[in-house]
Image (cartoon, rainbow, N blue to C red):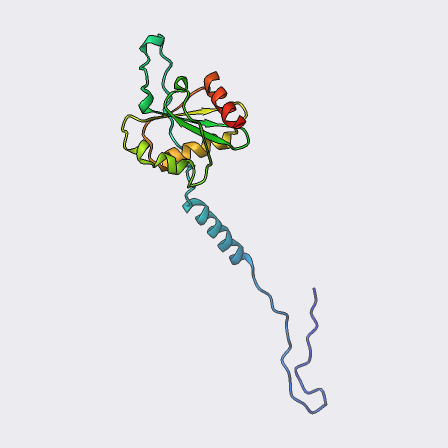
Length: 174
C-alpha cells in the first residue's frame, strides 16, 4: 500500500512543527506464551487431596455358630439407629430387658455416653451398632464418626433383632 508523506517543510503558517502521532501497538505474543507456561507450570506442580476414608475391618462369618464367643451383659452396649434421626442405647443384652434411653447425635448426647466411665473404664466393652430399616446412611456415618472421636476400640455393626425392635417400640410408647 502506498503511504502519503507529509511535507516536512514550512507550510507557510508560522507555528511549531509537530511530530506525527502514530497509534500505540502492543505485541501480545510474549504474553500468551508466558500465560501458557504459567498454566503448565501450576498444573504440573499441584498435588491433589486424597479423600479421607475410615477403614472398617469386617469379620468373616463363622461356619459354625458354636465358634462364636458369647458376650457378657456387663461388657455390652447397644446403640440403635432409629427413624427420623433418632438414636437409642442400652447397656447389657436385649434378653435381659434393659432400660432403653433416647439420646441425640450432639456432643452432649451419645458422645457423652461413649466417654462416660461406665464405657471407658471397661476394656472389654463392645459397642454394637444396630441400624433399623428406616434409619439413614448419614446416621450410620455419624455414629461411626462418634466412635472414632471417642476412641472406642471394640465396636461392631450388627443386624437388628426383633427383641431390639420391641424394646424401641416400648420406649416410643412410654
